[in-house]
Amino acid sequence: MMRHRYRGRCAAALPLLIVAASCVPAGEAPARPVASVDTPARPTPAPAAAVAPPAPLAPGDFILRGVAEQGAAMLGQAPGGTRALTLDGRSIALDRDGGFLIAFDRDAAPAARLVATLADGRSIARDIAVAPGAWRIERINAPYRGSAASDADFARRRPAELALIAAARDMRVESDGWKQRFRWPVTGRLSGVFGSQRVYQGQPGSYHSGTDIAVPAGTPFVAPADGVVTLAADAPFTLEGYLLIVDHGMGLSSAFLHCQRLDVKVGDRVVQGKVLGTVGSTGRATGPHMHWGLKWNEARLDPAKLAAPMGR
Image (cartoon, rainbow, N blue to C red; front, side):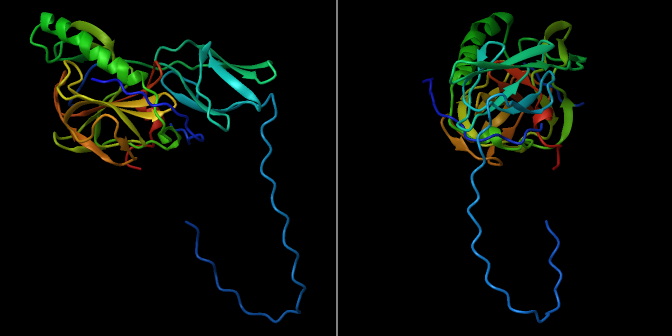
């Protein structure tokens, strides 16, 4: 597969919100009428002066919105004059107006440091306390190797699959999806939660990297936010089955696993609510369901912390 690279920046900050089948892998009120009253004529008021645009944030101001906890994300506004931003030493994408997105992995450390470097060389730091998550253990009656015919077949096929996933994650696209209030790709019964430690037929595996929604096979699923397709598997992966990845910009992407059918291709721009395909049970799954995973750069996130409550 050719590796596509999209470059660009996103533009504003988003409002952050943020068992049968199991899967794996990883208005305002109307105005009331007013009675007519004769009043003396008054001189026409002079035009109001134009309202000046808001002044940029002064150096020293740092704005963060959201909850700092494992598996969650926050929106921020950098101090005025910021030319570079890092989180624990890693560069963070900065929007044209100084907005940014940061998030914390399921296993994030209890503290993080956000540093803004100003145009004059000075730096401003913010220390962030990251609250721990509560994770549980789940036992899954499915083979660790998924749909692979044998352990040897899994070992042979898995490296190429991981390479395709890594290439898709490395792409940087121009999309405003990260600014939107995310919606669920499909609604139904939650059959698997993010962060649970998984055990497959007695063999310990990695923690559950997304949220499962149990619905009948063939149920359409939609884009939770605007984005660009960076991976659309043309054959089932051993664990993920038919896999779709959509990048929402600023390093935030969605993965949809175990699909029955995909209706989009790499490079397609999708809008929130667009049908992307149908739910299935391909790959390592015990029944039809949608596994929705979210990732910000290398951090795996809990979709339930970013999406609006299901059904709204």
